[in-house]
Length: 282
Image (cartoon, rainbow, N blue to C red; front, side):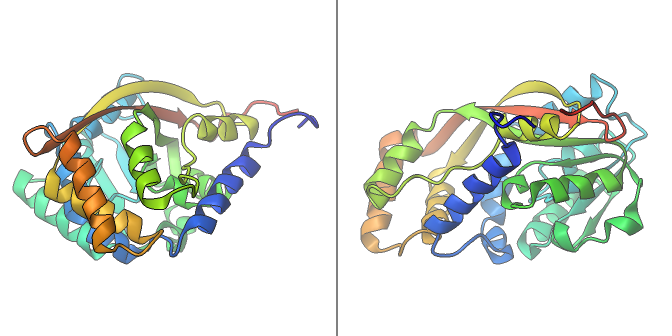
């Protein structure tokens, strides 16, 4: 790496460290259990259209097929489990939060899906050596920004994959509402940043991988009550959620509401690579 080149791993670590410095407490397994119903609600939007779009982007390039075995790191409420399991041979969900596991089990039962299993651990505790090369695809999305040691965790994904790895990350969307609400509650405290695309692409490329990218458009529709819970939990990580803070959240949501529902559009980058293919690095 030249002296003037950006060290993208270091940039990732800086974003992580800056966010942690702002927090009163960091995300925990209990946090994700508390958000299980909310995540389930917005991932079910349009019958799992988001997860289906990710699957279809990968299938169009032969990355997944009906015979594929796929492992998802940090499955949440079944973001990819349900839409993928309908179209592949087997799905493995790595998910430690009991609330999320319960939602996966409930929603797969409703849809008649049985070709999956759950590893109830955080990803860092999974013995990747025992799974070496077991999956045609290892995929993750929501949890990737929670790993400060990003290259180590990418390496663990690659160890588990017999085929490809994939990271799905936000690639933009309106942040006006989020920043306005943050400023009204937190004042001049900097809004926390989350490392996503294109930083993850740059990390992969800078470290010898040959990533491919396809963009997808998605939307979410969430109820007022669910979003109140989302923001209540989110701001509890950064400040005391007083009645005054709740009033600010409520007023902001009511001003944005359309008949009690909140619709937002965003774009995501589907980034995949073959761990066996490497380019020369300078």
